[in-house]
Image (cartoon, rainbow, N blue to C red; front, side, top):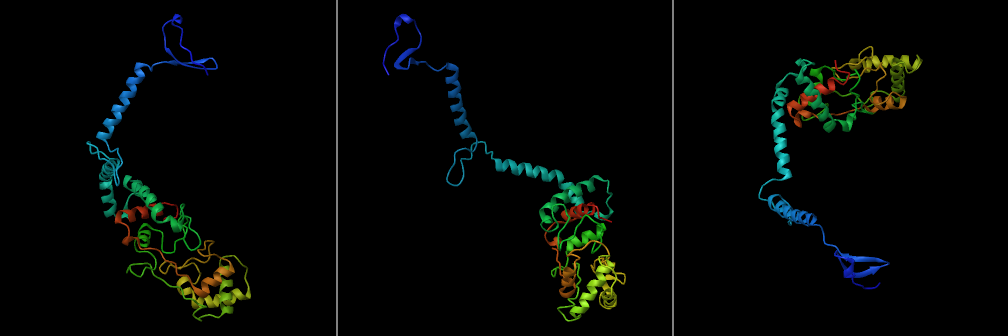
Length: 291
């Protein structure tokens, strides 16, 4: 590196800084005035912003700013505005008999959409995001209902749950544990399984199924009916269709008959407001299996 000064004969222009690297000379080129004024303006804007808005972090918060504005306050105001806008609809849904509401009415459409959102928050954990259910949890899209699929019946089930001891209006039934309680012997349970699978057209007729038919009539028909098509007043499923809550193989049916099942569902009336329960009722009913 060598130092040299610009020759005055070369004319006016930026002054050399006296440094040169491989023939490239460093000049004292001042910044454009417009750039400098823009830079100064941004500094002034930053100072003004820190004064007007929350900006400077403190130990537990930030400086509030003279305007009093905050993103939290803006969110609260927008939330209150949205709540006020739908307050009338919510009040209507809380008091209406959802079973009498016109399916084509704007209020019903609002109820279904509100129920869709409430279902995703409260029900998908058991029934799944598409309401198709899983082992032990009913599919809400079909037309097979343990306790009934009308608007009024669905509302009753959602509001008061299944087998909830703290709700006097809960759905309540209990299947005997025929094996555990010694009501039937293992060979007899095996015969009942044969009858049930034959009634569901999963197995052909057999001597075991014929013996199971007599045992079924004596022990099971009181709830499931003489034709094994179930009874909604007891929450007893139809045993002749292809819909099974816990499985239709011999092992699953043996477990059900021997030890019984005792599925439960929360009583949502203790957790959700009446409008939300009505919205859930409307949503579940329109899934495809509502009656």
